[in-house]
Length: 322
Image 1: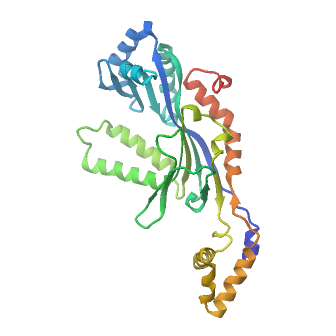
Image 2: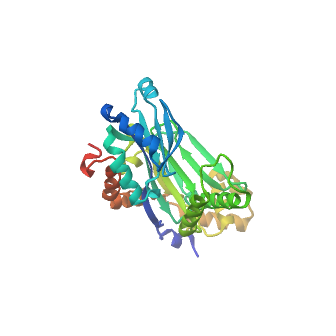
Protein backbone atom coordinates (compact mmCIF):
# COMPACT_ATOMS: atom_id res chain seq x y z
CA UNK A 1 0.00 0.00 0.00
CA UNK A 2 1.38 3.43 -0.93
CA UNK A 3 2.45 5.83 1.78
CA UNK A 4 0.29 8.60 0.31
CA UNK A 5 -2.93 6.61 0.71
CA UNK A 6 -2.23 5.78 4.35
CA UNK A 7 -1.52 9.43 5.16
CA UNK A 8 -5.20 10.32 4.67
CA UNK A 9 -6.27 8.24 7.68
CA UNK A 10 -6.34 10.45 10.79
CA UNK A 11 -5.41 8.99 14.13
CA UNK A 12 -8.23 8.85 16.66
CA UNK A 13 -7.35 7.94 20.21
CA UNK A 14 -9.92 6.30 22.44
CA UNK A 15 -9.66 8.37 25.61
CA UNK A 16 -11.89 6.13 27.68
CA UNK A 17 -11.70 8.08 30.93
CA UNK A 18 -10.83 11.52 32.27
CA UNK A 19 -10.72 11.63 36.04
CA UNK A 20 -9.37 13.27 39.17
CA UNK A 21 -6.60 10.95 40.29
CA UNK A 22 -5.36 12.70 43.42
CA UNK A 23 -6.43 15.55 45.69
CA UNK A 24 -4.57 17.28 48.47
CA UNK A 25 -6.86 19.29 50.74
CA UNK A 26 -5.44 21.82 53.20
CA UNK A 27 -7.20 23.52 56.10
CA UNK A 28 -6.91 24.85 59.63
CA UNK A 29 -8.81 23.43 62.57
CA UNK A 30 -11.11 26.06 64.07
CA UNK A 31 -9.75 27.15 67.46
CA UNK A 32 -12.99 26.36 69.28
CA UNK A 33 -13.14 22.89 67.66
CA UNK A 34 -9.58 21.75 68.52
CA UNK A 35 -10.81 19.55 71.35
CA UNK A 36 -13.36 17.92 69.04
CA UNK A 37 -10.63 17.30 66.46
CA UNK A 38 -8.34 15.69 69.06
CA UNK A 39 -11.13 13.41 70.27
CA UNK A 40 -11.92 12.38 66.70
CA UNK A 41 -8.28 11.60 65.89
CA UNK A 42 -7.64 9.72 69.12
CA UNK A 43 -10.83 7.70 69.38
CA UNK A 44 -12.29 7.11 65.90
CA UNK A 45 -12.05 3.51 64.70
CA UNK A 46 -11.79 4.86 61.13
CA UNK A 47 -8.39 6.42 61.84
CA UNK A 48 -5.08 4.57 62.03
CA UNK A 49 -2.62 6.83 63.88
CA UNK A 50 1.12 6.69 63.19
CA UNK A 51 2.04 9.74 65.27
CA UNK A 52 0.15 11.37 68.12
CA UNK A 53 0.79 14.41 70.31
CA UNK A 54 1.49 17.93 69.05
CA UNK A 55 1.77 16.31 65.60
CA UNK A 56 -0.86 13.85 64.40
CA UNK A 57 -0.27 11.69 61.35
CA UNK A 58 -1.93 8.60 59.96
CA UNK A 59 -4.53 7.23 57.58
CA UNK A 60 -8.28 7.50 57.46
CA UNK A 61 -10.01 4.33 56.15
CA UNK A 62 -6.47 3.23 55.25
CA UNK A 63 -6.91 5.39 52.13
CA UNK A 64 -6.61 9.06 53.09
CA UNK A 65 -3.21 10.16 54.38
CA UNK A 66 -3.45 13.06 56.83
CA UNK A 67 -0.98 15.17 58.75
CA UNK A 68 -1.75 17.80 61.41
CA UNK A 69 1.28 19.89 62.39
CA UNK A 70 0.44 23.42 63.68
CA UNK A 71 4.06 24.34 64.52
CA UNK A 72 5.39 23.43 61.08
CA UNK A 73 2.44 25.28 59.53
CA UNK A 74 3.47 28.49 61.34
CA UNK A 75 7.09 28.20 60.24
CA UNK A 76 6.17 27.46 56.62
CA UNK A 77 3.20 29.86 56.53
CA UNK A 78 0.75 27.20 55.44
CA UNK A 79 -2.36 25.49 56.79
CA UNK A 80 -1.94 22.94 59.57
CA UNK A 81 -3.99 19.99 58.28
CA UNK A 82 -3.20 18.15 55.04
CA UNK A 83 -5.24 15.30 53.57
CA UNK A 84 -4.06 13.48 50.43
CA UNK A 85 -5.99 10.76 48.59
CA UNK A 86 -7.33 9.37 45.33
CA UNK A 87 -11.07 10.20 45.30
CA UNK A 88 -11.80 7.19 43.05
CA UNK A 89 -10.82 4.89 45.92
CA UNK A 90 -13.19 6.48 48.43
CA UNK A 91 -16.68 4.98 48.80
CA UNK A 92 -19.77 7.19 49.13
CA UNK A 93 -20.11 6.14 52.80
CA UNK A 94 -16.49 7.08 53.51
CA UNK A 95 -16.90 10.40 51.71
CA UNK A 96 -20.05 11.22 53.68
CA UNK A 97 -18.23 10.42 56.94
CA UNK A 98 -15.42 12.80 56.00
CA UNK A 99 -17.80 15.59 55.00
CA UNK A 100 -19.89 15.19 58.14
CA UNK A 101 -17.14 14.65 60.73
CA UNK A 102 -14.00 16.42 59.50
CA UNK A 103 -14.98 19.31 57.22
CA UNK A 104 -17.17 21.09 59.84
CA UNK A 105 -14.11 21.31 62.12
CA UNK A 106 -12.08 23.20 59.49
CA UNK A 107 -11.70 26.71 58.24
CA UNK A 108 -9.61 28.21 55.41
CA UNK A 109 -10.15 25.05 53.32
CA UNK A 110 -8.56 24.78 49.91
CA UNK A 111 -6.60 22.65 47.45
CA UNK A 112 -2.83 22.43 47.24
CA UNK A 113 -2.72 19.66 44.61
CA UNK A 114 -5.02 18.30 41.91
CA UNK A 115 -4.12 15.52 39.44
CA UNK A 116 -6.10 15.11 36.20
CA UNK A 117 -5.67 11.79 34.38
CA UNK A 118 -6.49 10.95 30.74
CA UNK A 119 -6.69 7.17 30.17
CA UNK A 120 -6.10 5.91 26.61
CA UNK A 121 -6.14 2.65 24.68
CA UNK A 122 -3.07 3.64 22.66
CA UNK A 123 0.69 3.56 23.21
CA UNK A 124 1.40 7.19 24.06
CA UNK A 125 5.14 6.52 23.80
CA UNK A 126 4.72 6.79 20.03
CA UNK A 127 3.86 10.50 20.24
CA UNK A 128 6.08 13.57 20.45
CA UNK A 129 5.56 15.94 23.41
CA UNK A 130 6.54 19.44 22.39
CA UNK A 131 6.86 22.30 24.87
CA UNK A 132 7.08 26.00 24.00
CA UNK A 133 9.05 26.54 27.20
CA UNK A 134 11.29 23.55 27.79
CA UNK A 135 11.21 21.92 31.21
CA UNK A 136 13.17 19.09 32.77
CA UNK A 137 12.56 15.72 31.03
CA UNK A 138 13.03 12.39 32.76
CA UNK A 139 12.59 9.03 31.01
CA UNK A 140 12.17 5.62 32.58
CA UNK A 141 12.64 2.72 30.18
CA UNK A 142 12.15 -1.03 30.42
CA UNK A 143 15.09 -3.43 30.14
CA UNK A 144 14.21 -3.75 26.46
CA UNK A 145 14.56 0.00 26.01
CA UNK A 146 10.82 0.70 25.68
CA UNK A 147 9.54 3.91 27.26
CA UNK A 148 7.48 3.24 30.39
CA UNK A 149 7.30 6.72 31.93
CA UNK A 150 8.10 10.24 30.76
CA UNK A 151 8.12 13.17 33.20
CA UNK A 152 7.89 16.74 31.91
CA UNK A 153 8.77 19.20 34.65
CA UNK A 154 10.31 18.90 38.11
CA UNK A 155 8.49 17.38 41.08
CA UNK A 156 8.75 20.72 42.88
CA UNK A 157 7.19 22.72 40.01
CA UNK A 158 3.57 23.86 40.03
CA UNK A 159 2.79 21.75 36.96
CA UNK A 160 4.30 18.40 36.07
CA UNK A 161 3.15 16.08 33.29
CA UNK A 162 3.49 12.29 33.43
CA UNK A 163 3.01 9.94 30.47
CA UNK A 164 3.19 6.32 31.54
CA UNK A 165 2.20 2.76 30.81
CA UNK A 166 -0.65 2.16 33.27
CA UNK A 167 -1.05 -1.48 32.19
CA UNK A 168 2.57 -2.22 33.19
CA UNK A 169 2.16 -0.35 36.48
CA UNK A 170 -0.90 -2.44 37.39
CA UNK A 171 0.83 -5.69 36.43
CA UNK A 172 3.78 -4.82 38.67
CA UNK A 173 1.44 -3.96 41.55
CA UNK A 174 -0.49 -7.21 41.01
CA UNK A 175 2.79 -9.16 41.13
CA UNK A 176 3.72 -7.52 44.45
CA UNK A 177 0.32 -8.33 45.96
CA UNK A 178 0.61 -11.98 44.92
CA UNK A 179 4.12 -12.11 46.43
CA UNK A 180 2.70 -10.81 49.72
CA UNK A 181 0.11 -13.58 49.71
CA UNK A 182 2.89 -16.10 49.09
CA UNK A 183 5.48 -14.71 51.53
CA UNK A 184 3.20 -13.14 54.14
CA UNK A 185 2.60 -9.53 55.19
CA UNK A 186 5.61 -7.85 56.79
CA UNK A 187 5.69 -6.72 60.41
CA UNK A 188 5.47 -3.04 59.48
CA UNK A 189 2.94 -3.31 56.64
CA UNK A 190 -0.26 -1.41 57.35
CA UNK A 191 -2.22 -3.31 54.69
CA UNK A 192 -4.33 -6.27 55.76
CA UNK A 193 -5.02 -9.36 53.65
CA UNK A 194 -8.54 -8.00 53.19
CA UNK A 195 -7.13 -4.74 51.81
CA UNK A 196 -4.88 -6.66 49.41
CA UNK A 197 -7.70 -8.90 48.21
CA UNK A 198 -9.88 -5.84 47.54
CA UNK A 199 -7.06 -4.15 45.58
CA UNK A 200 -6.41 -7.32 43.59
CA UNK A 201 -10.09 -7.58 42.66
CA UNK A 202 -10.06 -3.94 41.53
CA UNK A 203 -6.95 -4.49 39.37
CA UNK A 204 -8.41 -7.61 37.75
CA UNK A 205 -11.68 -5.81 37.10
CA UNK A 206 -10.07 -2.83 35.37
CA UNK A 207 -6.89 -4.17 33.72
CA UNK A 208 -6.54 -3.86 29.94
CA UNK A 209 -3.91 -5.16 27.51
CA UNK A 210 -3.14 -1.59 26.38
CA UNK A 211 -3.60 1.26 28.86
CA UNK A 212 -1.56 4.44 28.83
CA UNK A 213 -2.13 7.53 30.95
CA UNK A 214 -1.43 11.22 30.40
CA UNK A 215 -1.54 12.88 33.80
CA UNK A 216 -1.21 16.49 34.95
CA UNK A 217 -0.03 17.10 38.50
CA UNK A 218 -1.14 20.63 39.35
CA UNK A 219 -0.13 22.51 42.49
CA UNK A 220 -1.03 25.82 44.12
CA UNK A 221 -1.65 28.57 41.51
CA UNK A 222 -1.56 26.06 38.62
CA UNK A 223 -4.67 24.24 39.90
CA UNK A 224 -7.52 24.43 37.40
CA UNK A 225 -9.75 22.20 35.28
CA UNK A 226 -9.65 23.57 31.74
CA UNK A 227 -7.77 23.93 28.46
CA UNK A 228 -5.04 26.04 30.06
CA UNK A 229 -3.36 22.90 31.44
CA UNK A 230 -2.22 22.28 27.82
CA UNK A 231 -0.79 25.81 27.36
CA UNK A 232 2.81 24.59 27.29
CA UNK A 233 2.21 21.21 25.64
CA UNK A 234 1.50 19.94 22.14
CA UNK A 235 0.99 16.22 21.53
CA UNK A 236 1.92 15.23 18.00
CA UNK A 237 2.07 11.98 16.09
CA UNK A 238 5.17 11.98 13.84
CA UNK A 239 4.36 11.78 10.13
CA UNK A 240 6.51 8.63 9.94
CA UNK A 241 4.42 6.22 11.99
CA UNK A 242 2.96 2.70 11.81
CA UNK A 243 -0.07 3.88 9.81
CA UNK A 244 1.78 5.90 7.21
CA UNK A 245 4.71 3.46 6.95
CA UNK A 246 3.63 -0.03 8.12
CA UNK A 247 7.07 -1.69 7.94
CA UNK A 248 9.28 -1.12 10.97
CA UNK A 249 12.38 -1.49 8.78
CA UNK A 250 11.12 1.22 6.43
CA UNK A 251 10.26 3.52 9.35
CA UNK A 252 13.71 3.06 10.84
CA UNK A 253 15.37 3.80 7.50
CA UNK A 254 13.23 6.89 6.79
CA UNK A 255 13.85 8.29 10.28
CA UNK A 256 17.57 7.73 9.80
CA UNK A 257 17.54 9.42 6.37
CA UNK A 258 15.65 12.39 7.85
CA UNK A 259 18.51 12.91 10.28
CA UNK A 260 21.28 12.03 7.76
CA UNK A 261 19.99 12.93 4.26
CA UNK A 262 23.42 12.57 2.59
CA UNK A 263 23.56 8.89 3.54
CA UNK A 264 21.02 7.98 0.83
CA UNK A 265 23.87 8.06 -1.70
CA UNK A 266 25.36 5.01 0.05
CA UNK A 267 22.32 2.84 -0.76
CA UNK A 268 22.01 0.46 -3.71
CA UNK A 269 20.21 1.86 -6.76
CA UNK A 270 16.92 0.01 -6.20
CA UNK A 271 16.86 0.73 -2.48
CA UNK A 272 17.69 4.38 -3.13
CA UNK A 273 14.78 4.69 -5.57
CA UNK A 274 12.39 3.02 -3.12
CA UNK A 275 13.13 5.43 -0.27
CA UNK A 276 13.22 8.50 -2.49
CA UNK A 277 9.69 7.58 -3.68
CA UNK A 278 8.52 7.12 -0.08
CA UNK A 279 10.03 10.46 0.95
CA UNK A 280 8.29 12.23 -1.96
CA UNK A 281 4.94 10.81 -0.82
CA UNK A 282 5.59 12.19 2.68
CA UNK A 283 6.51 15.69 1.44
CA UNK A 284 4.02 18.31 2.62
CA UNK A 285 2.72 16.16 5.42
CA UNK A 286 3.12 17.51 8.94
CA UNK A 287 3.19 15.76 12.27
CA UNK A 288 -0.46 15.35 13.31
CA UNK A 289 -1.47 17.49 16.32
CA UNK A 290 -3.53 15.37 18.71
CA UNK A 291 -3.77 17.91 21.54
CA UNK A 292 -7.29 18.95 20.54
CA UNK A 293 -8.61 15.43 21.13
CA UNK A 294 -7.51 15.62 24.76
CA UNK A 295 -8.93 19.13 25.14
CA UNK A 296 -12.30 18.04 23.76
CA UNK A 297 -12.53 15.10 26.17
CA UNK A 298 -11.69 17.40 29.08
CA UNK A 299 -14.37 19.86 27.97
CA UNK A 300 -16.98 17.08 27.80
CA UNK A 301 -16.32 16.07 31.40
CA UNK A 302 -15.35 19.43 32.87
CA UNK A 303 -18.61 20.17 34.69
CA UNK A 304 -18.64 16.75 36.31
CA UNK A 305 -15.01 17.02 37.42
CA UNK A 306 -15.50 20.52 38.83
CA UNK A 307 -18.58 19.30 40.71
CA UNK A 308 -16.69 16.35 42.16
CA UNK A 309 -13.81 18.49 43.43
CA UNK A 310 -16.07 21.21 44.82
CA UNK A 311 -18.02 18.77 47.00
CA UNK A 312 -14.80 17.54 48.64
CA UNK A 313 -14.11 20.99 50.07
CA UNK A 314 -17.70 21.99 50.75
CA UNK A 315 -18.15 24.42 47.87
CA UNK A 316 -20.63 24.86 45.05
CA UNK A 317 -19.16 24.18 41.58
CA UNK A 318 -19.32 27.87 40.59
CA UNK A 319 -17.31 28.79 43.71
CA UNK A 320 -14.37 26.45 43.09
CA UNK A 321 -12.04 28.57 40.95
CA UNK A 322 -13.32 32.04 41.87
